[in-house]
Amino acid sequence: MIKKLNNIGDCGIVCDFGEEVNREINTSVIKLFHHVKQEVLKGNLKGILNYTPSYNKLIINFNLEEINSSKIIDFLTSVDFSKLHLSQNSKKWTIPVCYDFEMDLENMSKTLKINKDEIINIHLNTDFFIYMVGFIPGHPFMGDLDSKLFLNRLKTPRVKIPAGSVGVVEKFCNIYPYESPGGWNIIGRTPTRLFNKENESSPCLLSPGDSVKFKSISKKEFEKLANE
Amino acid sequence: MSNYFFEILRAGINTTFQDRGRFHMQHFGVTPGGCMDLDSFSIANALVGNSLNEGVLEFAYQGPLLKLIKGRTKIAMTGNVLFQIIKSNEEKLMGECNRTYILEEGDQIDILATKQSAYGYMALEGGFDVKPFCKSVSILSRAQIGPNEGKKIKINDKINIRTNSQNKKNFSTKVINNNQNLIRVLKGPQFDYFSKESQKDFFSKEYKISNLTDRMGMRLEGTIMKNVVSANIRSEGITKGAIQVPADGQPIILLTDYPTIGGYPKIANVTSVDYNLLIQKTPGAKIFFKLIELREAEQLYKEHLKSILEIIKNIKEIN
Image (cartoon, each protein chain N blue to C red):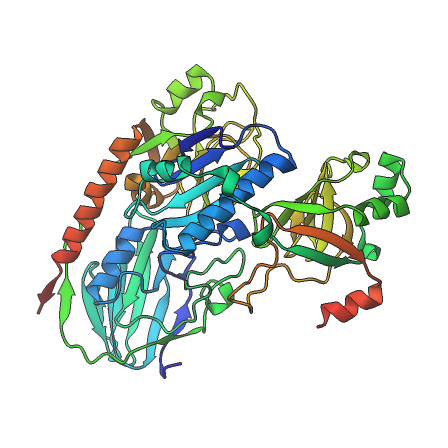
């Protein structure tokens, strides 16, 4: 449920679902995100430019030439949450990952006092939920990892992490869609392209609210899939 | 692709194709981007008779030197730009902003500098022949999205243009450049994270625009903002013009190519009416912030839009 509705600048609205961050709260955020998106696509809500869900908030950006804050707040307060569903709009993905490309398993194993195979097992057996996608195109923030695997960011972030790297921090797991700097603990790499400019109708594979399960592949399979 | 094109003889510092931006993709991590100064962009398109969302060339500080290799075209330059037209017979003509010029085959257009401003625009009749990505030709160079493989324009690039202009008439309009240094803002969602003293300082002390300023953000130097709650918040969606304050207490204004989500507290948000004024400020410029209310910001923006439409309405033929 929305706890607070406020303007953020003169062409943005923030729907705040409260301070807590858990799957239940994020599910409400995503339900509202899907609803707003559908209404915009159906042409029922003119002037909306973007709708960005995060852990506990949905930010709506709009064109002040066409609509204003009070009209959007009217719309949002009339939403009946009991009628919103998540399942029909969300997809389930299986993403291949090759753990041979890990960069931090050794250190993680030492810090957590859990052997590498067990870390991989826990990761493989986690049903991940995509809380949000962002910062750079196609970059998912997924959770929740077992608390046994909770780790902080690297003290010194790496300057370059290869595209497809799978990382973990606290209860979250990410995938770097591009080669980029980063401070997450890298446990493997996927050959799956998360953002594909060639596919203009649907360039981004993962969407907030989707779920992800990882599947372990060998280096050979990785090379094969990467070259497809 | 048409057969008419420019060749880039000098790229300039940050030359890209831009339109109003790419929307409905922020939840995928794709920032809207688009022209930094939407007013100058609209006026440039209107002068050459284009739709107001046609892609234009945006440049910053030093612009490109372009040679029209094949074709004939009509261009308009907007912003506050120093440029010259070099005719194929070497004759040089100083350019004026907010009017059109007809370029013949072999002519060059040398965009020397933006004067006391950051961004300038060149539109041409019929538009550039570039391929949109997700309905926009805006180049997002950080993510390499948009035409020209998502990269800034570089030397020896060929830029195709759609139409070989038959038009003989030129047009102009009058634009008054606004140099005020007062930027009106609304309270940000974490305004209360900052000490009472800092809140007061924010609206009374001057801030200097630092060199660390680009299409993504503008770093300010001035009185340190003291955060009394937390220097980090849960990452949340960003809006254009958000003024965030990281742990060092120096505000950063997030501009057109903002990251789609961010986790720093936001003390304020620049109003739409003053956004174009802000982004045209250059490093070293000093600004002050003034707090206003939402209704006033909305009203001011409406009046501002009217004044831009008035400029467009006043486009007149010249001889």
